[in-house]
Length: 231
Image (tube, rainbow, N blue to C red):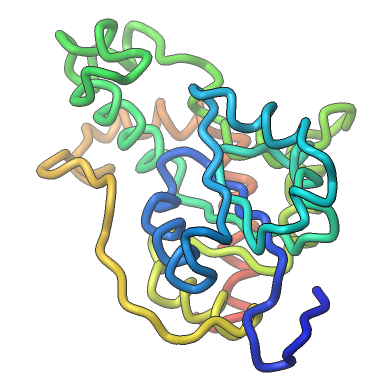
């Protein structure tokens, strides 16, 4: 976390972008803070993560920030970096993931979801990995207790945010990482989609059971965020 100027933004940082948790908007803020030429935005589909990891350490160290769909295991892709991430209410995140795939012709599951309602997709069986992705991505792979591992790793991040408290989260990142105040526009939002509270009560209860691990992590994250930032 060393920097040549104690008033400059902390660098380097690695942003673990958990899918559908306001990460696209946060990446735009990171680019504004550090400058687009100093930020490596890594895309899974393009093989960017593997290509960046294969570069010599001195080339990677030239970047102030790396952001992408990175798991906890991949956090070391930028040596010595402070790690940050964002979480989201699990049902809202799964719904956003579904509607993104449904509406985006280039999405991997677009064809599978294009003719289905969200409820039909749930009844047909969503991808199991989608329901507890936050735990899966933040855990240590060899841990016996995935949720406990994800909690420990989240708590060790330099800072983390919650999608539902995005303004507070950006302010928290700014305080911890010495970011200047910046404006942003919400990006990659699915307009007009239903919200969790619009779902049938039984469907919502079913999804909460499916996302049980992510809810244990998310409830822990909300309490920890309140302790660090305030309710």
